[in-house]
Image (cartoon, rainbow, N blue to C red; front, side, top):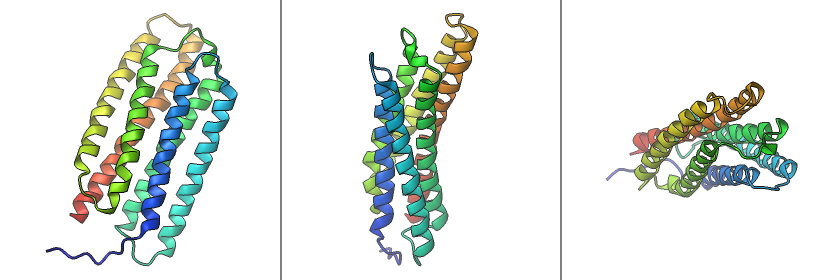
Length: 208
């Protein structure tokens, strides 16, 4: 039988869970931006508010690391996981703000592949949020990182097809440049979700 001398520090798990649920809010707001007749500025402002809340959670987590003598698992892993969750939110917020600032929501419609990429991100956010409470025991989490990897592959395919669409001549050069910035942020968010999953897998292996 394996004994653990690490405490069960609930505050860390609560902060990770709060950060993950903010990602769900972020992807839901990105989906709102694609709705016809939506108040784009309102959505972009709310997305910024969620991003600011995520920053506060990350700072709270760092303070907790520095003030806790014995942490539930390695400090560097706690730091990495908190930082990577924040990275996802930063990319989501950047994509939403660029859509608003560049006026891309004024187009007759956004590319279908962009909707597909946002759908992948929404699924990744929900899977991540559902997995966070399991960090306490680190049991039954293998399905989580396998699913995140599968979704990241779906995101890569949508990203490649979106690039093909952008450079097909359907859009003028300036619109292509603007959309490419948004698309790159969405793809970076997709990758960042996988980085979160990889870190959790590393923690699970270390603690097993």
